[in-house]
Image (tube, rainbow, N blue to C red; front, top):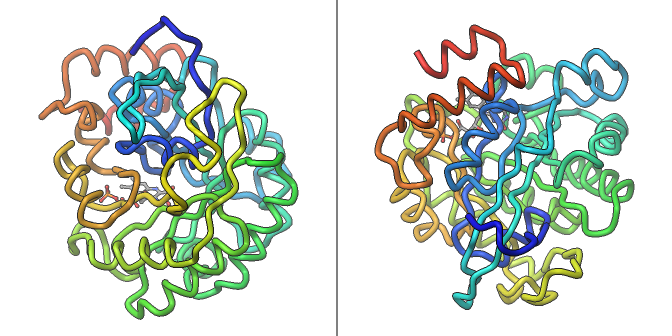
Length: 320
Ligand SMILES: Cc1cc2nc3c(=O)[nH]c(=O)nc-3n(C[C@H](O)[C@H](O)[C@H](O)COP(=O)(O)O)c2cc1C
């Protein structure tokens, strides 16, 4: 990290395009709240994601807004990163808010409310819980490519030019369905994709990540021949195309417990970024190369949780 230069502020898809080793904190209901996001950001987690927020409640209810989303000026961190050509840049990290919905309109309403406070909106197409499936959101959307396209299009139409709208999917046991979903999302204007390498019926505890499935989805995305539109920043000079020659920004997710796992998963799948959930809960400093949670991280988390608030039960879960 450096204080020397004013950091470039880039949307998440542009970060992924411009830099080869972007690390991402997964959305985690209850856990990826402000103190945890700020903590992992201090340890080379360049993009962080809020827990899944239900768009309908968020857009209609001020109390839901207050309890579901908080941020502050300190949570994003500043990094010195080498771009694809090896040149160093000072860059600010990015915050993404994940929303869940079965309909496009409340999703766009919630996204519009959130836009001033976040760098991207992510659509949850992976939550496997029975209540979510019954409500026709989360993993239900994996087989509803046209609904997903409609949602992406509707949000994009309400956001500023170049605003990042991403989709987080699981793979399907029938990979042709994954291909259709990916193509629909991208043609509708999705800026980036995160691919969790498990199907809707495969719990993380029982099934290893399927990197071949993720690679398939990455290749589907790249085969679209689309390069997602990228907003320009006056302080940014790497280039309009983000420097990656038209590759769609993708993120691999599943079973990343160490920095080496992140590197291997990127290499095995061709994804630009690497996302961790349970790995970061076990060791918030994993992307910075720490083998176990450093003492400093515990002290920092205690400080953030005390200053910015965290339910005591969650505090105990994360660090006891
Ligand atoms: C406690 C917990 C909460 C989660 N909440 C969400 C969520 O809100 N939205 C989402 O898309 N995935 C959620 N997930 C799934 C993770 O984002 C991730 O896709 C999954 O855990 C696989 O990554 P991993 O192998 O690194 O844990 C959650 C996972 C955990 C462990």
